[in-house]
Image (cartoon, rainbow, N blue to C red; front, side):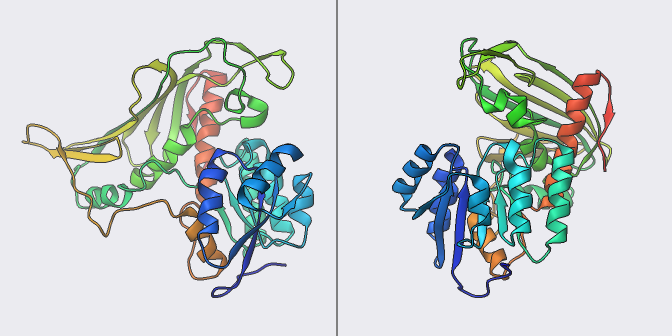
Length: 350
């Protein structure tokens, strides 16, 4: 059973699901850390597993994820699959004594997320980490500091606008993001942006959601058959925050030529606006928002793999993102799902 690997002890990592983020971030990030070796990989198909293994010089390919997880050649498992496998692979890896780094969108639904958290609690000697919401890492500490210092005064409302910048494509095939069997109750990037909001201003207590599916059947690329689509392509959520403010989250994949993602915090005395990885602010009496300089000591960056390895070695505690936080954002996405299905306001489970 793998426990904390102190100091610079070697860490042997297996990869289950080598998608875009795993290939572009996790594998290079892990390989850049001294004493970390990626020893095995399992993708959806053996052919794609071999391709990844050849590209990154990974010595062992497994035909199935459970064979990789149960093998004695790893100390840690990186899960880069679609959400449908996050729960079973995580639970199996922890039971096998392996540390876990799991891709975002914690699970298919809240029940699975709670099962993952229970497994992590039962194996508290192991690291269980989720890939964090990445978009605002650079400015998170600055926003939190400004709020604590009273820049906003009383927070009144939060506006989250997320656009792909793409016009609707009625002929595009079904992807995992639109497939409820693979994505579950996750809707586009809703959970990712809610995690961001939680960092700044806390959690929601209730939601009222409206969404729209414009293309109700799409071709499954695996079979060529048309399948029903249930996950919205355009979503509006009104949320009541626990601290009293109201939040509006609009996430759309069909609004062409508007690619910016932005978050605005409106208070009684000031406004903060995040757009294009920059932060702007202004206070009562000023004429316009001004760019806010992020202090060097506050500036955040992507360090997911570094934090994971440090936690495995016992020199750091995971904060970005622990399973408890993941369960909280899954509670929000579950409430949104229920609100859409039942056409009513739904409380977010604590």
